[in-house]
Length: 71
Picture 1 (cartoon, one colour):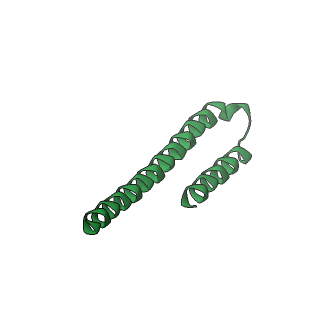
Picture 2 (picture 1 turned 90 degrees about the horizontal axis):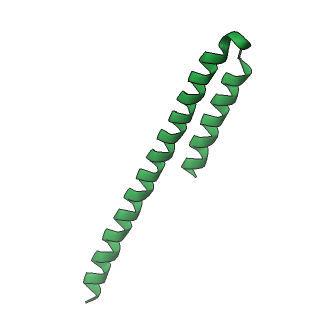
């Protein structure tokens, strides 16, 4: 859920930047901004994956504790 929200915010920001372009003189700036937006999107995705991995690790620990208690 949070991943979807983060990605939609990044996409909305990139569309806002695209709507404000001034023409051919901004081509280089737009290319740099697109790279920055792509990097921000990737960073947000990586952060969400790290959070998901941490959640899975915590679940694994809980499962291991429950399994040892069952013995």
